[in-house]
Length: 300
Image (tube, rainbow, N blue to C red; front, side, top):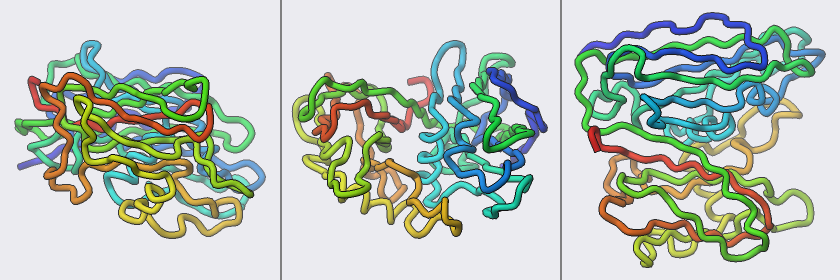
């Protein structure tokens, strides 16, 4: 098996704009999306760098392959690769170049010819990067994008990742959210607004259960505090070494995991089901960002 690593975008100075890139025609394992810039006065935090990228979307002739916000892509990287994305130069020097690289995956593992995005015709697969120019924490911001192709690969499955905003339900307590049907759910990633800080045990989502055709499936009642504890299996440990970087990252994210061993034996199969739902016990009446990570059969 061979691979091709090619550069699609090099040192593009991005303003407030949508960068559009036609992706190659061979089967694709993953993209590498890098954000670089010079920090202004002192350290640029991870949150400030992520704010440079609003949303990333990949679509094939209108079919959504991936649609995530930058924070959710960061969390997805932690989930899939069990460590945090690389962020360079954790120093406070003015004008120090900082670079954050995020992987844009089309399979649970990189370089997997059985699980990647299948070959398509020229101009059919497109990436859209919705960008914002930064001016208070980073200047001279540029983006770079590489692509890893697997020529000749004939995958049986690919990874679909989509973030939706679950609107504030109007009250605390039970909030029922419909999940995608027809594929295998690898994990559900929740990014909350409210995480406990001072003198509070309250989470935006206090507890979650998953139901398939009205029966609980895998998660009958997982509480937020214990889902936080599951982070040790994905990206545990101290993330940074500077004062402003001491918060645990990814901030406010937990996972409802159906692939804890990475071998697919616990995937939640939704093919042929009538209803698949997440039942959220809301601790706060607020919106939640929910990312579904699905293993989709080619041609399915």
